[in-house]
Length: 101
Image (cartoon, rainbow, N blue to C red):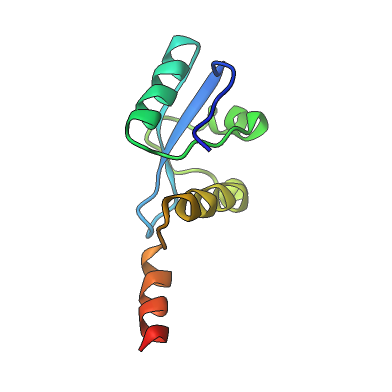
């Protein structure tokens, strides 16, 4: 998932705390996009390439929550990132622990 073949023209970073809607924490084009991707790689943050989604997310003001219309698309990306990282969201982790008992 961290493999990016071509340098991105546009990149958006999101933050998700599990309680609120994801927020746009960084965005940029050209060299800034490349820096966002490089920082993600350095910190083992999963990357997802979706030019349509990044185009829409780039219109969300920095620091703002994503709009409701994007919840499903972004939830799929976050779920994939959790899966790649071997993590479960807090609510699922608790249910999983209870099922193991």
